[in-house]
Image (cartoon, rainbow, N blue to C red; front, top):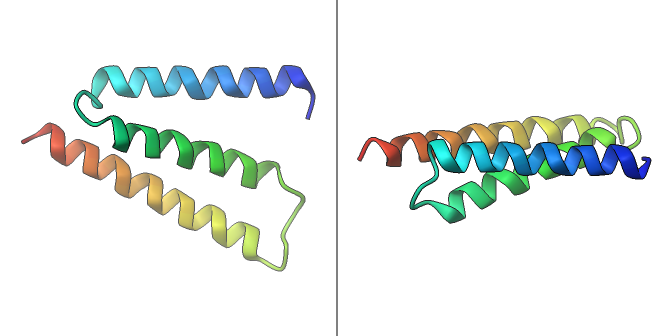
Length: 80
């Protein structure tokens, strides 16, 4: 991956993290950090060479579910 693509991906992830932090993450730095890391992991999995016997695809599905659970946790805490 070229350095420009890596730079743009990094900027996008940081921008999303900032936006999420501003909207929902106040007082939840660990949950927001976990969400950032999961999104970065998903990007790495997507950039990896294809398939791996179905394990890469399954890993993406699991990371997507983890992202959803972290979002739900953040949303839940925001209502309390």
